[in-house]
Length: 292
Image (cartoon, rainbow, N blue to C red; front, side, top):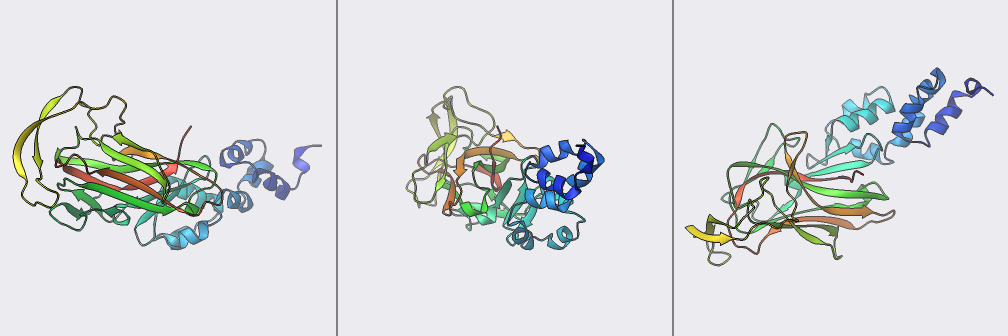
């Protein structure tokens, strides 16, 4: 029997049980498959079940609602993140799979001393998707945490979390002090590891001009104290450049099981060394499916 005699709705039903990539490949089989592949019935299945409620909170909800087809909506969500949750998060889809991606803006994070202007400053940045970013001036206690409910993520999916940031002129203390990062469900044990937030790795022990507090709450740092700092760990990870011009460093992985409803926490902290560090702009923490 020729495939051409099959009802288009039947072909669309079959295509909806594949995936975005396979559906597009099969569309070249015939004009019937092409027409079926473009139907809303197919792309409705590829969109997340809760896509309507997500779009409703977006500042682009009217524009998205005016798109001519579900396929056009799907591709729009893949090509450019939308801002949701009163500007505090962004949402997008992975083009090959339709899996969800989120970024928590700096304003959606818990930043210790974040409201103290001498430590952190809130600015706008034309290269950011968000209205505000957080600029680290100088702190000796660096602690950033973000939380998101696992129910917001795609189930049965391995995610990785990334701190998205970039250095500023006068960056200091980030090239030789490792920071501790981790990802895990709130209340559960999660693996911690050390990473570096500076892109250039130190290869030998050096002397650094640092400022050190005497006591956690002493507001008078001693400036110009030289002290040796150990060489970086060979297995510590370093940042990599993103396509949007920002840097990212992986914080850890999380497998989102079906039915998991607890909060996921991502953390970045350097609270043990006591040395001052600064010169970094934080855009947010991104969660996206792990590739490979």
